[in-house]
Amino acid sequence: MTAMEYGSLQRPLVLRKATSGTSKPSHLDLLGFRTIPTVQSIEGLQRGSRTPDWAAYLTYVGWWIAGLPVASGTAYCVLKVPTRSYTAALVAFGALLRSASEPFGVLTWAQVQSLEEGTRVFLRIADKLGKKHTRSGCVQRSSYLGMVQIDVVDPKYTHWITKPMFHKFEVRLTEHETSRRISKAGSVLSRIIPDFTTEWIHTPTTCCAVVTSQAQWRHELPTIAIAAGRDSATFADFMAPSVDDVSRVDVRPAARAGSVTCKFVILDGPQPFLSRDAVHARRVVILLDALEYQKHSGDVALMLASRDDALLAGSLQDPIFETAVFVSAGP
Image 1 (cartoon, rainbow, N blue to C red):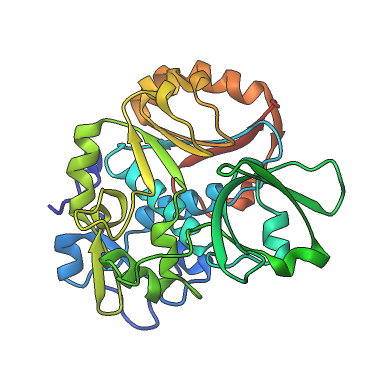
Image 2: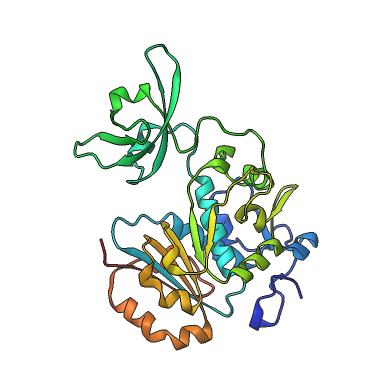
């Protein structure tokens, strides 16, 4: 049995080795990657096994929910799975891939206009002598159409930027001075993500938070591998602190729902699910195994009954697990 054996199913989800022209398309094929990665246990990767269908689907769910536009309320995705082993890590990895696909480096005017309120940015501006200085600030809503307001922290100052004057600013999500060293994660992502830049590694933004068992999380991450071409890494290289300070943590594990502040949150299990009201996020994935789902089916039914809007079921194509996606009413 491999490390990614799917719990109560009592059979390896390694399936057969992919052969040219015979394997059906994976959910990973839908994401527009430069190279389709293989997500497997370390043992399965060494044998050349393909990505299990369930692992590809869970990665796709994380990718899709992370990019879902939610202007108000909260988008919920409730997944009933045979076992929760490895599911949170795979959904989180999908969210991480979405984050790595977003534009980094110097932003265009259109990208600056689309930034959410409260987003931290770095402004690089030239003074009267032509010397450039970098200032940190936050994007705020402007009462004027076609204008972006950025409040600089130190020294305290507000910039109101319009399209004609945008050329005077260099706006980034990362600081201008970044290391050129590359980590294992960066090497793999460079093969997967079109136009990937290693500046993403230094971005001070958490793409996802996971409320889960900390012991289980630490156990699972080193046992799941991802490969693209000749480069490979484990999930720990992506979602655990780096000892050489080359990469930062994109996915933050948490033991309690009340301690989470993030745009995308994964609630792994019944206790986090029951604490969902303490989570303030635009996107939430809830993971329950079959017995947990049955026990809390009444709570799930109440959530569905109070939904503000139902999303198209076809958005999550050919679901492997029972999946409900809906938007709740809210500010």
